[in-house]
Figure 1 (cartoon, rainbow over the protein chains, first blue to last red):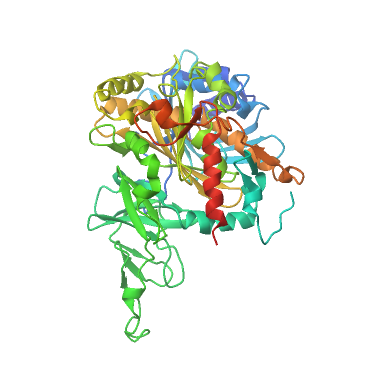
Figure 2: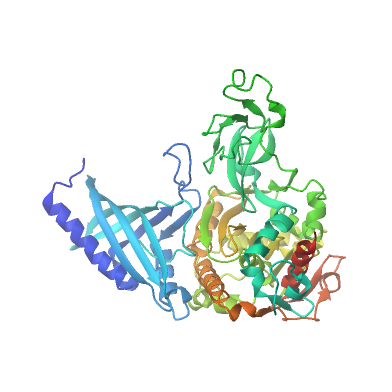
Length: 168
Length: 423
């Protein structure tokens, strides 16, 4: 059952998300990695047009847009921050709008479902809008939350961007 | 160079003999329109793989040039049709894939079987007085459809030679991409799709013969150790019909970071195949390739990709990326390949993100007025080509240049020009 009505929990989740948003917007990707646990699974499926809603997302053994462990996510961050990564040289300007719509308990963990809008602009006039939904599984680690599973759906079937370089 | 809008002098625009290609061919709307007719409506085009249609009535939709097409399996046979109701042109399928014995047009309800036959027309008796010749108004079917190692190709051209003729000198090499393991290949489900604001030929020629860009465009991937720096030993191979491929010696290099079980599998396979008397086995994995006009392949020690650059306008390409594995591969190796592929290619891939970055900026720059009067330089290795047979032996077809050479692009644009010149 959704416990969005639990003010304290909602506030904790919201603060955690705001903390993450500020790191992403500042392109502080190395620090951002610290919000994840070592056993992370970080995925974004493909979306297909099918007759029924079920089956429109690619399965775990199918192609996806992202399917990373903590190690490979670290590699992506290292690349994005390296000197000759033209996709971030000059850097993008990013805004994240993350809004929780459901928070529920699952064993020791919390499942947080949020709508998301990511606005990316770079160079003179390039603009990309990635809109979708993010499902996080988070657990308490020492004195802060840690994400151990992130599943983000970008609602487009044909991505309108020349590449996908934003993290979500 | 001044170019009239009516009569284009393709000999002046495209001069592979001088290593010059005018950049107008990457922006001009009239040239683009002519390509749809002279290139895409005449050539054999890649549609997909048999493993996308395992069951009767399975279908998927894709593009042939700028046209939406439906590929079906009906009575066991693979067929392809224009996704276009013969009454008013509505798309009869609006999904990417599915299973359907029939397609009913949402406009007036004409119904077509998975064989393409018109099998139902609302008002056939009262409105058409039973005089509509249903046999004449089935879905428009491609002129020819053939498969090669499970790869499905089709053409709108009834006069085109066979697929084998079309692939020509490429066939012996392409065979080593899809038929090197018993049972052949299968596609990992799912097609990555994204739009790049660039003419379709730039991605196609990049995969065709551009080993040169790797060290600079993809420098970041080497800086983090995911890929070794190019060994500067390798080759480009150019084939009649505009096809071609190229690779670093012994396959594109994996770095020290990341998984290497598949690289070992490839090594073992090469050792095993050495006993076979097939000179094309020395080109496993193939490297980067393009089958004219817009089907590209990347066959590395990490994964195998087929990649379509569908034309969506003079300066817009819809990329479709698909990942292939040997059918008989252990599940854990398939899983490794799937994840390595997603990490390195496709819209978010650590390599591929940079290609999109560059192509879109090239596209923007050549839209400038003065820039639009310039030619691109394809002079690398001009006059230094050798016969593949002389260099790699055993009567292998094609001409070859060094690892960094634009021999493949020159032949590709020669082929492009010969088709564009045709009335």
